[in-house]
Amino acid sequence: MIVEFKMVGAGLATIALGGVGIGIGTIFSSSLESTSRNPSIVKTLFNYAILGFALTEAIALFTIMIVFLILF
Amino acid sequence: MTLYSPFEQFQVQYFFKNDYFYFTDTLLVSLFILLFFQILYLLIHFRDSVYHVNMVNFVFQKIYAFVYDSVYEYLSNDGRKYFPFLFYLFVFISLSNLIGILPYSFTITSHLSITFSLAFIAWYGMAVGVGYNKYGLNLFSMFFPKTIPFRLVPLLVFIETISFIFRSISLALRLFANIVAGHILLDTIALVVHKMLFPSYFVSGKSILIAIMPIIITMVLVLFEMVVAVLQGYIFMVLCCIYLKDMVDLH
Image (cartoon, rainbow over the protein chains, first blue to last red):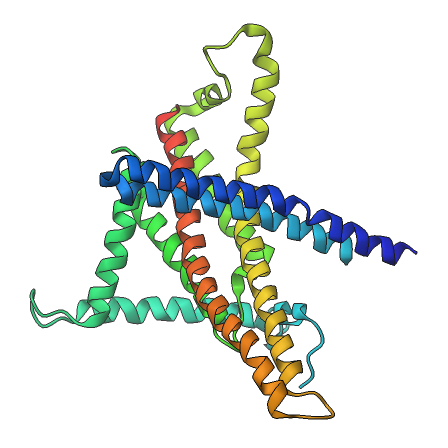
């Protein structure tokens, strides 16, 4: 019984990835928007976008850590 | 050799052991990186003239300029003297991640012991070595925001302290989780390819045709992992820069 519910819990924990998807989408959409407003600072903006992307992706990976903690 | 689970790649194995230490593959990869640096410095030293540089020299110059630009963008004049540490941090983390992508290799950054040691060295060195040496006990004023009503102060000081301590843990956990998740993803898809290509009972042209798709996905993922490997080194360095800026300038 507990094994099956562990599986269910691990599956439910991945719902958090939806928020991370929204976050990454927001980062790149706003980066694109600001680049089209001011194309001369594209290099700086891209650096910040990559930084934000990596930080947001790390949150997604914390979810994976939780999933592994539940599963094993 | 049979494959059991995607977690098998993270097992630390030893080559030989002594009464005093185990010679593990973590140690081997670390020694390899150290040796690589020594050879790199030797190769940089040898050059024909100012205008004719060899390839190693050129690539090293590009990496150096990249890190130099990022560090000098974030730090003020007082923090810039810590550039060598940040440069070595970037190259060490990127290199150990990239070595881990090689087949049959071992990723040293996929272990919390390594990443947490790195992050704790950086964090402790910044808090005590830089901040406390420079400001003494005035360092604690960074936990005290000045332009807020007095009633909120205890709560905010508590939150600031927690976030300050959590910096070291989040640095370590970010690198660790990124590398582990990427490697598990790669290994899972490689296992799918392996099971499609070599079922125990039949091999046909159809199964090979179906298995081409995961192979292409694996190639794309390996490229993505290489980007992530360098990116994680960059993130680690940039976050260290930001924390160092806090310590040097004290808000």
